[in-house]
Image 1 (cartoon, one colour):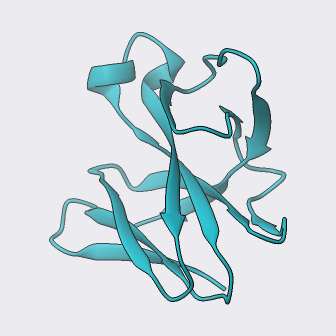
Image 2 (cartoon, one colour):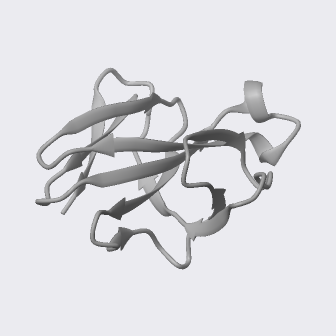
Image 3 (tube, helix red, strand yellow):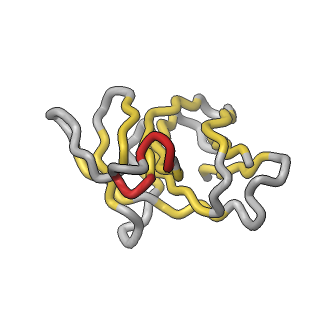
Amino acid sequence: MWVAFRNNINQHVWVATMRRDTDGCGGEGGGWRTEGWWSLSPGEAKTAFWTTNQYAAFYAEAQDGSWWGDTAGPSVYVTDDQFSDCYAIGHSAPWRVVSMSEINVGWPPAAPGTHTVNLN
């Protein structure tokens, strides 16, 4: 299933994700890939990735500093520049840690279609 993000607020938003990737990150990071940043203008939607796993995660930041995440979610290393790494693998400085929110695309996730996360 494709996972997309829609920016429903009146300012720019950036999105980072964590998704299952046993091929690329099977030996490191427990089989999870972290990536960012998808840049979304107000009203814009973008498809970010394909998954065959029921779960993924995301963290988003708005231009004014507000954010979407979950302090109980997985903690992920991010940089302010674009990145693509395996989970729990630190970045070269400067990096910071954010807490992601779970995405449940339902079961079976390989069904055709798109699961859209609305950022309100």
